[in-house]
Length: 381
Image (cartoon, rainbow, N blue to C red; front, side, top):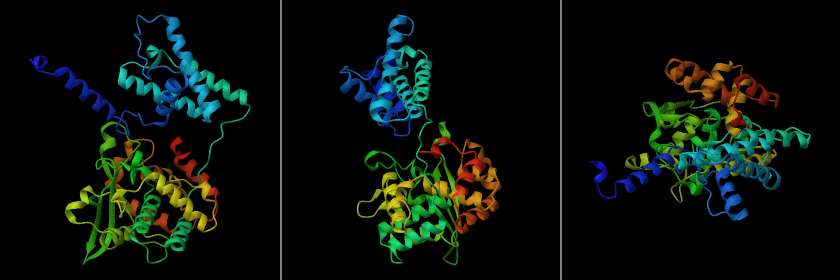
């Protein structure tokens, strides 16, 4: 039998840990998540306790011990708000992340799996005591005209390879309403994973006599669940437009400015630093975008990496696109959009062109985009 094999349980245990860790975005069971990192600081550095993991038997553990553990979690939530500076809503999300992390590695949540309603109620009450609503940083969308102006002002017409990677990434994110983390890596230290991030092999052109006519990139929907999160879906990009030309930018990048050999395309990040070969990161995209907005006189602090996606949705709303088109093209809410990818090709081509042609002239459209598409909380930072 299998259990008589040498080191059977040790091998199973290691495989189990790897598999459970792989279920999360960071591939490490969310151990690199800010919430878990804060939990470690709170437990080990702050309280001088020996271990972040606190598994308890849900049947035999006395009620008073479970309630004591709930108080421990509640004190973590208070510490996040009062001393770390996290708002109460984010603190509750952090508690949920830590609890899921604990359950993933122990098989049981914090406080022996006891309900966390007391912690949630505490945070609601604490917010009321502050006497004001939760403060959120609103990221405004990037207008197509502003992005075009900023790219020209900063990079000029003779962009080097790194600058071309940045500008092509910006254009693709805005025109495709793509999250930055779906085009470049958000992992620590620039870790790039072929199955999760697009490579040069995920760019496809339809050519006529050597002239590119259509451009499609394949990328995952980072908010999809289960097996769907591993499926790369097509994003159709227009070749040329009034303000931006994402398809042509990709053509120039991959064929002329920063090409790679055919046999290396599958292992080369779509957008990279040519000097190192490593993928650009969400942090680099955010910082470079802010720098570009500052150059044209905008307040760079109002922009984040998500501003490109917001800008695409804003331009669609400004152009009169109906809510279901915005939700489908932006891949919001559910995986129901998958069934439209073939059926709505002509609509997608038309509305993608609307994005890069839209001369958005006021910020009211930023609000319209959210209301029309019923966007998720992810669109607020």
